[in-house]
Image (cartoon, rainbow, N blue to C red):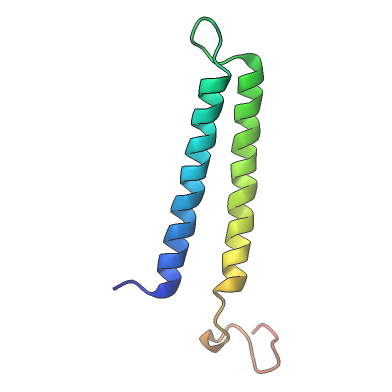
Length: 83
């Protein structure tokens, strides 16, 4: 059986990816031109969503690092200082 921390990481990662796929599908359906291709505004929105995804995953990674940090793992000493 997987550890609790690993399950949390998997759920958060899969949720983030599904959110990104949903945003990309939304952009693709709302910013399609007459010829079936993505419009210039849609391309800009797509690039912005990719940048947002990178920022989101960075924040999620930092948040998980703090939330799942186990003081007994030897990463900090008794006073809370990093080893």
